[in-house]
Image (cartoon, rainbow, N blue to C red):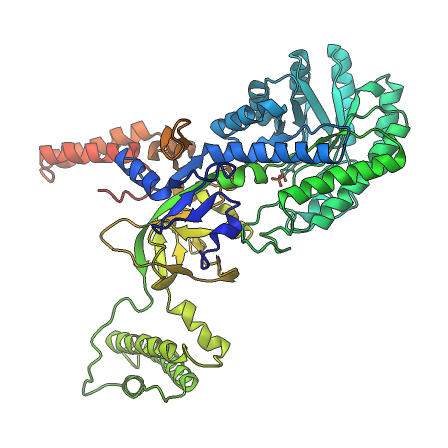
Amino acid sequence: ERVYGVSSWGGGYFEIGENGNIHVIPEPRMNDVRIDMKAVIDEIREENIQFPVVVRFHDVLRSQVITLNETFREIISEASYQGKYRGVYPIKVNQMREVVEEIVDAGQPYDYGLEAGSKPELLAVLAMNTNLNALTILNGYKDEEFLKLALLGRKLGRKVVVVIEKFSELTMLIKVSKQLDIAPIIGLRAKMQSKGQGRWQGSSGERAKFGLNVSEIIKAARLLEKEGMSDTLKLLHFHIGSQLPEIRAIKDAVNESARIYAELVKMGFALEYVDVGGGLGIDYDGSKSTADSSRNYSVREYVADVVYGMREVCDLEGVPHPNIVTESGRAITAHHSCVITEVVGEIKPDGAQIDTAAGEDDHILLKNMRDLADHLSGELNFQEVYNDATQYKEQASDAFKLRVIGLEELGKIETLYWQIMRKVKHFYRNADFVPEEVQSLDFSLSSQYLCNFSIFQSAVDSWAIDQILPVVPITNLHTPPVNDGSLVDITCDSDGKIDKFVIEHAIDHVLPMPAFSKDEPFYLGLFLTGAYQDVMGDMHNLFGRLNEVHIFSYDDDPQDFYIEEFVKGSSVEHVLSVMQYHPSSMAIDIKKYIDKEVAAGNIKPREGVKWTDFYEHCLAGYTYLNTES
Ligand code: PLP
């Protein structure tokens, strides 16, 4: 537990059980329920579902929706706040239908709504968000069709709020709504001066991509007044960035938005909602700090700062407390899914040792390296040995390029070098001071574990923005780690690796690995992948979407679980057809070529049939490595 910090980043949903396996606590409010991830893996294998697999815990998703809504209810009541909480889930964070359905269902008692940021998302949201009391918030740039769809929502009796991101959208909306004679509900997005911190701080300030500055807000309000539509302006919106690490930024922004809201109310506009956007962070690295992958506040503190911050300004200004809207996406979905991948190989820097016995004509570089290896003892200065061996190795590489030594000699020098480095590492283990370059041996001597997945599909932020995601072996955690390693994926891309892990509450380049048998599959979990990672990945190398299992616990026996749904990942045919190939005609072509070889007597007819079937079988198969065959 101390090594992997599970309780620090797990949000109460994960722990290491006494049997050394990762356990999921699907509903922390009922703290006695545990699902053993090993049992989930066994069930997946029994069902013959191929790895890698995305495992979704629907109870975790429900629990996050309930926690956010209940926390707002509690704080609103504690603060005697007069407005209500009317949260929405922005589906861009994870648009999977089953995810959105679960969120809508869990949010029903709270009139929890949905947010869409594009036309396709709006089409989905119109079909999903049928609760007439829940909000549908529309962000993002809009065309006339988008606005007409919003008005269709109004016709269906829904509370659809069109948030104006740029001024011309307002003139277009006024025109379309008058043409169709449907009253819109309008929100204005403010360009905030309060800066968010972290990776997405560009979402606020003068150069923000979305929103109206103060003069545009005034102009918009006046235009609505002139058009006789003052009563349609109901909401003020801001969003200062996702994954806000600092609570101060949120407090500042709430304060600024409350001032704008109050001024608009005093101008005569009866606004009903202030929408504080997304940004509620996730403590991916468990440090509870202002690091980009963390947050220095709890959900409760966030909610309290929003509610009390809004109340304070409104009371000072003498205006009604507005209903509060949040658009938290990451905080709702991050914990509920993880990617389970199998270790399919180990790449060791010194994997192949060749015979280094002395020969008669050995080159001086080889002799020197062998002398160094033969005379290593605890008393030696390990830094000196490190320097000498590194220099000989570099010289050997030059000598090889200059045709002074051959491949065999270079191989012996390499073998001796790694033997020496292992011993150096052993010596410095107890030293008081170890220079940085010698310490780097920890990394260079560590293994690279080859895992059956693609970072670009399943953990794209770890590649694109250095996002830290917790990675933990699923089993054998009751024994001390015996090895260290980083992870590499199966794409043909050197960037396809993970070499930043949260270990002992600090960032390390290697993941401690417990002992495991090479004859049994060994699984690692990439956790907190439910927000963005699940849906933003791409098909680099044509590795497609993953097989998914949706896990529920039984109502009458919550200790037990079942796979409610298996969603098949992309087949090879599918990813090829996305790239404009025609898999069925490819299969016909290959059959023709095979038949030709059969006719020429190069392939026996029976073999020809088998090869044809095999090609078709692979086309229909999973895009990842098949470790069962
Ligand atoms: N609302 C808007 C307008 C956004 O742009 C985003 C994402 O950046 C969100 C909500 C969701 O933010 P988060 O996932 O940080 O809650």
